[in-house]
Amino acid sequence: MKYIVFASLVVAAAVLSSSPSQAGCVNCQIQTKAPSATAGKFDFRVVCIDDSSGDELAANITAGSDEEALQLMEKTKC
Image (cartoon, rainbow, N blue to C red; front, side):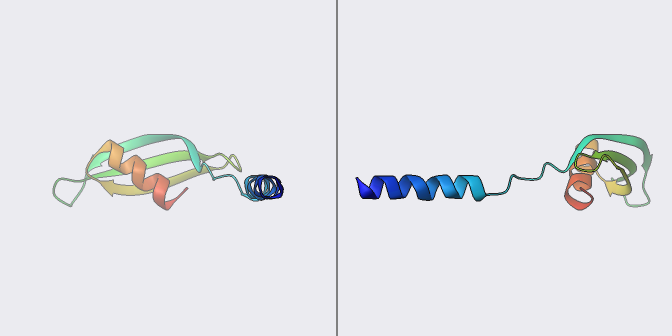
């Protein structure tokens, strides 16, 4: 019985002390898309809202598709 109580306390402490994951940016949108000098790529202007501060984050990104541009924005700027 002691071990069950101890294990429960350890698990509860781990759950309560762990920090929540950061969500990053919300509402990312592509503002502009133009052909790039790099073959098969496009130059994007992507804007997102930082969910922790409410600030607008903008970046110029070169990518092959819209989805790739949004993923790169979230990985590098958010």
